[in-house]
Amino acid sequence: MNTNENTDRNTDKGLVLVLGASGKTGRRVADRLEAAGVAVRRGSRSASPAFDWEDAATWPAVLKGVTSVYVSFFPDLAVPGAPEAVAAFSAQARRAGVRRVVLLSGRGEKEAQRAEEAVAASGLEWTVVRSSWFAQNFSEGAFLESVLSGEVVLPVGDVREPFIDVEDIADVAVAALTGDGHLGQVYEVTGPRLLTFAEAVNAIAESSGREITFTSVPLDAFTAYLTEAGEDPAAIEIFTYLFTEVLDGRNAYVADGVGRAIGRPPRDFTEYTRTAAENGVWK
Image (cartoon, rainbow, N blue to C red):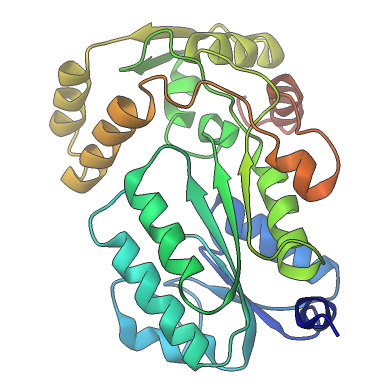
C-alpha cells in the first residue's frame, strides 16, 4: 500500500488549523475549507484559543486535535527569526500529531527559502506554495490607501512582476491540504503575465473608472516619508527589503504552479481588477 496515498485520502477527515486566518490568504483558505465541510480552526491573535508567532506558549492549544496546518507567517518570512519560528512550530506540530503542513512562501527571499527547508526537514508531509506579489495588495493591503488617493507612489521602476490573485493561492492551498498528489511539491504560483507597477495601476484605473497615476521615487525618499508618517520601523525594514532584493528583476518571469496544482491557468490581473471594481473596493 502507498502510505502517502492512504494519508491523502484521510487528511480531510481531520481538523485543519489555518494560521493567519484574518489575512488575505488565510481567510479565503478557511472559508473554502468550511464551505467544503472540513472542520477548521482559525488561528490568529484575536481567535480563541489565540495564536501568536511571538509566543510559543500559545501554540499547543491551537494544535490540539489538528491533522493539517496552513502556515502563513506574520508579518513576513523575510523578517529575522522567521525560519527559526517556522522550524520550531513545525516540530511542535509533529509532536502534537499533525500530519500535513502547507507553507505559504515567497519568491526570491533567502529567509523564505530557509523556512521552506525547515518545513521539508520537519518529518511532516509538506507542500510549499511559493507566491509572487499579491494583486490584492492594491485592494486590501498596503497600497489601497494610495489607490484611493489617486496616486500610487512606490520606490520601483520598470521591473516587471507576475502579480497573482490570492483567490488562486487559496485554491492551490486547499487542494494541497485536502487532495492527493501534492506531498513534497513546491508550487511556484504567479499570474499569467508580467506587469510593471505602472501598468498594474493603469489597469486598476481603467477598471475602476478612476483617475489614478503611478509615481516612481527613490527608496530613501520613500522610507523617509514612511518614517515621518510614523510607520513602524520593522515594517519599513520589510518594505526596504522587498523593494530592493525581491524587486531587483530576479522574479521577472511567470511560473506554472497554479496549473500544476489545480489544472487550470491563473487569473489574469485584469480579471482581478474587474472583480474588485465590481465589488466597489475603489469607490
